Image (cartoon, rainbow, N blue to C red):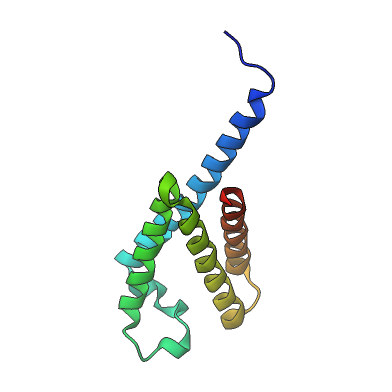
Length: 125
């Protein structure tokens, strides 16, 4: 009939996990799709050491990777490796911004996303 008070923390934990994973998936899907569709917009963020490579293809590959990692976060079988990849991707993105343009609003946003991906990572391990 009713639920006991000991069930409430389990339900909250489930929703916290689901919402965190969904938030990272949403961000990765939106930015990933944007990188695939409009790679020229994102090519300025590619580090100079990679300038000799086909930059637009690298951006599209990065975008596809974001979409796949985001989708994997929602699949229970692949959450752990996806959380590791998501955290590593965001570490790469934030360090690139920090080294390339220093402290700015984009870095603040991406550090927040990095912390969210680390939260998901800690939650699944």
